Image (tube, rainbow, N blue to C red; front, side):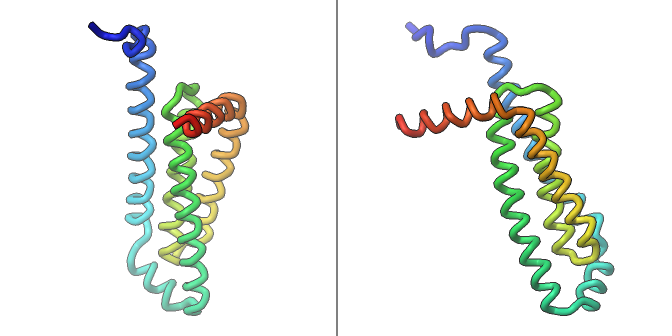
Amino acid sequence: MTDASALPTSAAATHRVHGSASRRAIALIVAAAAIVAALLATLPDATSLAARQSDAELVMLLRFMAAVKALLAVFALGAAVWRLGYPASPALSLIYVIAPALMCAAPVVIWQIAHVGFGAALFHAGFVLLLLALYADRGDAAELAKSAVLRLRRA
């Protein structure tokens, strides 16, 4: 005999569980595709020429900044993937997919040195989109975060 509370109560509940997993996968795939596109878009010749023409200390500083932005992008991607595990409107879901993808592509472009301004624009556009999504989602996201913290404390 199975426990009735362990089973989904409706087809909608089952769809939500599977729908959130697919949205999470889509967010990760889009972020990976953005990174690959950024790598392919920056030509190796332009990268090496820009690195040779720039001061070595400037290149080191820009690459350090790219590493910091990459760390921030990973945290943004993690937060977006976590949020996509719960029901959200299609518009918010789209923003939660696009914003971290832009942020993940930016450090790759900055690291290549050839298009630093474009990389910075990508990162900041993704960051602003993420902030706008969080602002629009402030009620639901806050409640989800509180419930997650309470679950962690109980465990």
